[in-house]
Image 1: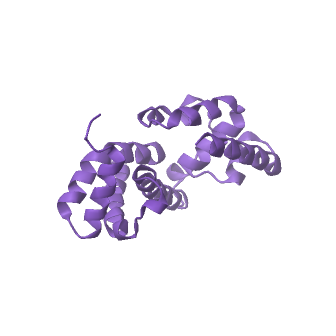
Image 2: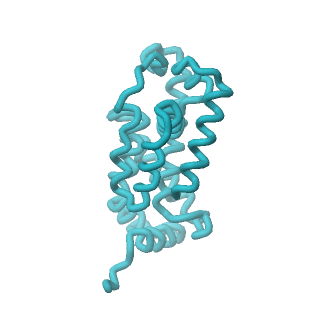
Length: 184
């Protein structure tokens, strides 16, 4: 058995050091997690300078929130990912709210693999159950969950995109979320 700490143990230690103002810990945290957090932000914002700036802003947020992190909040990877995801979604919503037609979400986009490509989950050992549940769901439920979580689509936007009543879509999304909750 190896005495090498797991990634989660390393990240917990680095977050604790960041909480005390250790800049070298932030640098190490960045090197261990930046590729995955950038992948989340690129998935939401697209590969552009906005995703790169979002990554920089995310680490500033992590630095500022590190003193608040406790093990009761869960493992570090989901905690870090939620900071990256939420920041990217906020940027996307702000961009979408502008009057620039290029920034408005294309609600007529067809359902295809681009929206449901969850290949990045392969990097996480606990993702097999999530992938299995998503595969078992109907297309609208799994795609809606992915679009809502990764792209920030609202129930109204999803309902219009699929031409399905909100109540019906809401029920299938909640059923899917319950199934995902039992898979984790």
